[in-house]
Image 1 (cartoon, one colour):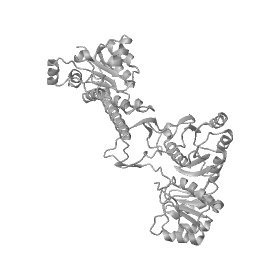
Image 2 (tube, rainbow, N blue to C red):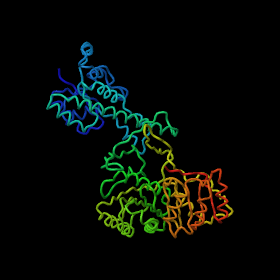
Image 3 (cartoon, rainbow, N blue to C red):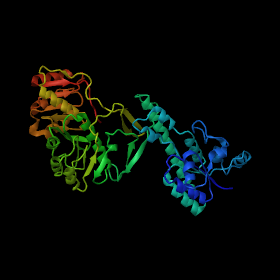
Length: 515
């Protein structure tokens, strides 16, 4: 009895060569639709599935392989005498190889103008059923969902006369990985179409590997970078690397933090953000991108060394010359002037990335996830800056300039690890105190970084001040105004201290913890 293979693929890569090799090895090829057509055009003999089932394809091709003549041939266990007796009585012949990849649902939904109806029509029904059946009966059936596995199967058939048990077991695992991703993608797409923002009872998401990392946070940790399917075009996953060595785990994590800060400023003014260890260390805006970068650099010329710089304007020659003076890990910009790229690419290891929409704000439907042992924390991404009007709570109102600088600092402190403090003056940060276990240490650190520039600066704090200690320390350092969420039962204590110091202090009513 001739061995048989079902081949029906949306991805035609290598299928003619694979089917031809199977035919040469004595396999009868069963096929459908477009696959049967391309095999016939290339003189590869094949039998229509309809000839085997005795039933024509119907409902615009929705029903063609859902038949006992196909599924009985796939699911019959060769070691089970009763199975083999039954299929013989029913006139069903065994199927030994199933090579199927599914309707292109992902490619369909990634089209910018796709309709819901078009997406639905590209949900495969028969394909998943057949490959899952083959995977269930993996001891007897080799199932292939990835064209990359064609060569292995053919080599083993030529060498051993059969596909090895080890390979069939691996291929079975690939099937369930493939269908799990396929179903998760459909689920995610339909949830989006229903505008569901609540946390579901069961969370299923799918990602595709972009690259393996040399290592994780430390050399003894393995790591990889996975991309969300359909990721927004303002995310690092969509950036194009133009130059430099491969991105590391820490590079990607830190660069993502830098982009988050830049999105707060959008494209209103030329803006530069410098980040080190996922915390902003310098942020500046100016009339030109050169001026903005000089401010970001001047904010903390020590911490920026070995850091990441992102800019919301094209890198020009003048700015490139300044950037090239410093050891940086990564530069990300919408584009690079020809001469600027020439200057920067002379640095062999400097990673140059382009992301045209990098400063576009994130959508409110984005999810923020953190893995914890035994589970995952999921929340809506913090895409808000303010919620309602800012309220002045002191006797002295802030000047227009102070208010501008406080809003600048507020955009930055939102992305500083808690406890976080940001000091700003003249459209640049002058001191940042990130990730401390108490608020006074965070302020002292920011003041230390700022030095003499503290005088005349404004202060932003990610959470409320429950005591007067930070207000008193700010007064001694020469800070003139404070922006904070408010909301402590002891707000009055810090308000009184601010009034005594002649400060202007405003409450936003919204905190921005970042842990």
